[in-house]
Length: 136
Length: 230
Image (cartoon, rainbow over all chains, first blue to last red; front, side, top):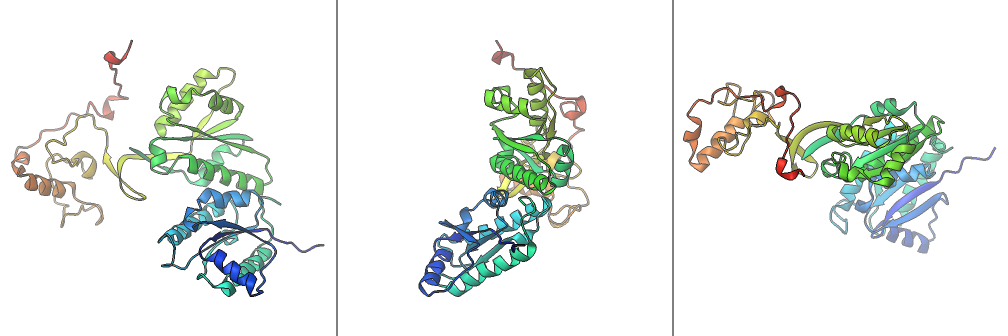
């Protein structure tokens, strides 16, 4: 039997997470191939329906990676993103999905190591949770 | 505006679990502004229903639609919306109670080959003002006989827990109501406002009992403007 390989969507802020991804690439740090990155100009623009839609469309896990608090290019986008993730987590729970499938985290601009750790950690977390029960 | 909030998901689920074609219809007016039943909330509820049903291995179809105002025929008489309603086994209206009732009457009048079942997705809570982002508070109970000219623009019917016309009562303490410390005493606010306006004498005469007939106690109210009718 083949091991379950989760599909994970990572909504990444252009200003921090994407910069961290660039640094990770240049310095040879590798992250899990299970991750599909969606670049957003600011994580504050992610709406709750986007997060739910990702699960509906087959994602086993979703992670939102924004700037550190106080470092958002648009001042408060990361605070907004955190609130939306929290709301989406409770909506997922109501629908019968584990809220742990959705994660909010942040990286400082050049924080390639943390970026890679978040993605690899999320892959392991979702692998242990198993497939999205609303898809498989 | 009319302020509402979404019903708990479990309650909505129990209303629709025996059906396989569900239509979620949002309303583009008050409940969009109070973020309870607009386009985004329609998407959220539809996603939740799909996820919940698929998890339980139930094959269902959830469609989404919007009407600018569910309390007005003009905005409901849309062929695309009517077709979606025809195809659905059950409709969840994300409008206020007015919209749910009006949609039920409208679609059952327009669609004659089968009865249309419409259930509420929201609890209609009050007529209120938007005080801050994500904060609404009741401001009017629609008593049908406005007294705001006597009370400095602060409604004692709505904002006083006892709806007193001659206040404050003994439960007012440091400007707060006895029901809880977060609720302002309406009569404290009224006296402050009238004092600032130099009109404190306005509350000296005792107000007699209020005629509640224009309020809901006289049954459902109706206004007919003959000048608007042809």
